[in-house]
Length: 350
Image 1 (cartoon, rainbow, N blue to C red):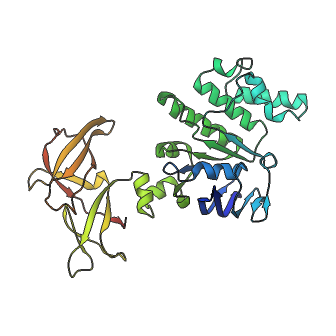
Image 2: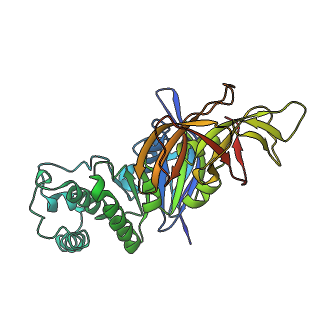
Image 3: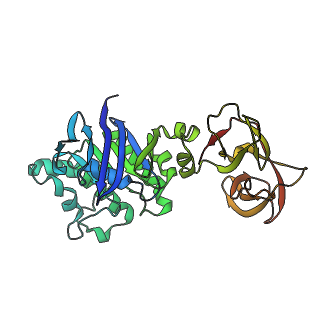
């Protein structure tokens, strides 16, 4: 599949502050990328730089093999053929649905405008709403109008800044599925920003995780979750809980933990490590010395969700907020015996 977007070593400085540093990213034609990371990590700045609303300080970017920017060149946003949907949709309140949609294609002939309008009204289930104003629409309808307006110029690339954040939770998943089907039907390449990793799994083909202006890891969502390349990636995606490992004296592969001795086959890191513990690798024993207590209980579709804290004396190895799911009911404050099941340990230095 052809590469539509290619970004190479993109950096951005705003008000003498480095906001993006050496970001390199590619996206295949027709692909959907979910851009995630903590607040202030540079996600929206990256989106604005791709759109042309923010100027780069270094780097190169092409869309469909057309140069958008490099160290000596900057193509204005109106010449990039890139659509953007903002978090608040940014619909014109004084214009009808029809006028909002055709706003960006006013240079086309009236016949072409009408053809695209009819197609988008049908495609986005907005028929019979074209004479309404934004305040007369539901949140989902406003979102569809914003999508229609962005698609009217037939952009090569569509950018979406937290497009589902203002949608009622009950409708969010349905709208994500509908929009994904629409983008795939039209073969539109898209990048969307979100704080919600679950949205990425529903909506995107690829995920890219950012931290402090850098792109830490990208790839298929399942692969990134199974093989995070850093503590920051695993922690932001909430892939599990953290347990401290402290090296034993005069050993290279044995570490102390709140669960006893942990043996690592290979590690090049010296000093204390953080072990990523997923719920499925924890088991509760019916007998043995207790080592944790229940701090929180909630009910989920996966059964009871618990947060444990350790009751060991060694404060260096103590853990908090150890996440665990079970169909068995324990009471708040109850002490239990936890054990790690044998598995391939994933460790990082923090």
